[in-house]
Length: 263
Image 1 (tube, rainbow, N blue to C red):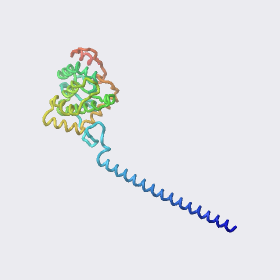
Image 2 (cartoon, rainbow, N blue to C red):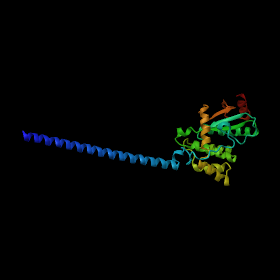
Image 3 (cartoon, one colour):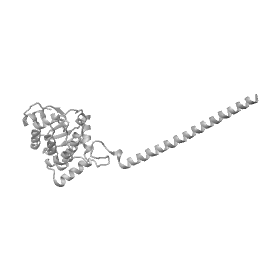
Image 4 (spheres, rainbow, N blue to C red):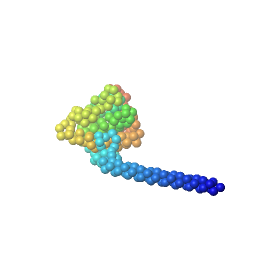
């Protein structure tokens, strides 16, 4: 009997010892976990602080390194409410406004620009109309590139030098025959502005503005305003903000003015 009691006591002591060891092991694992979590949290905080200091959170997509701290610039001929840009060819502020809503990668826009563009510009120079451009860039989504928005930004910068119309025309005249090929940065910041008549020191200023993304906010505003107004296809034409359509494949100035005045 004594031997049996002694064996039972020894078994209980062994069970207690094993239980204490399990508790101690669990406590060690808990301490290790807490320390590991603290280290991870500290590392994340350091990374967040570093990114904030480097301006990572201020960067906007689609720009040449542009950040939200870049000074926002408006074209000299921006229309009220940042709706678009007026051609510098306008000579009569009381003339009806003919608005062209386009996208620099739109093939149909290119066709209309080739046929109607010279007529519109001639009428603007004669004071018969005021010519306004509202450039959209939704084709970037369809074509999976950013050529439309980059071209729109570059055209807006060209207005600083009084060359919006020339730059606009240059982009369309160089639109690739294959849709989606788009435009290179070298074209947009170098060859196109020179073809539009921006050279020397002005070219250097143009390129600096392009690289800094100074027209990004304005171009975004134009696109968003056009979308909010329901103009979601290109080309779209307006006469004093009333939508019109041109169907003549060989338009004359009289034909254009008839459509504009009838709106």
